[in-house]
Image (cartoon, rainbow, N blue to C red):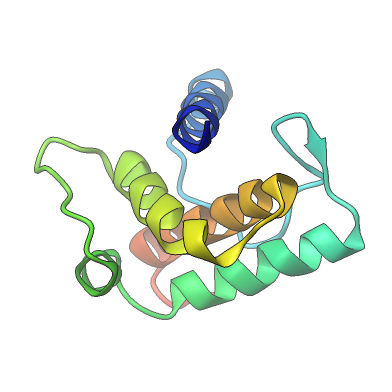
Length: 120
């Protein structure tokens, strides 16, 4: 079941990136919704907390620390999602919180990858 949910998150993330037409470089502020999930203030706090936590180190270092092997042919967007899923899965019991945390972490990883340590 968890694998299906995580696969669904991957599909939503890739679909959102394709619809946007732009390269997903991460965002620095919580969105109003993640997929079909509307974010209230508590969810936005989770998103932002995970964004900050996942932005503190490089994608390569974070993958190494949590034990994720990223094949060379993966895009940064897919790699960030793989890392975020592995990093967040043991931390959250509620599915909505997990989905929110994965999205925040993924955005933090991508923000660091494309923008460095800049916050805006």
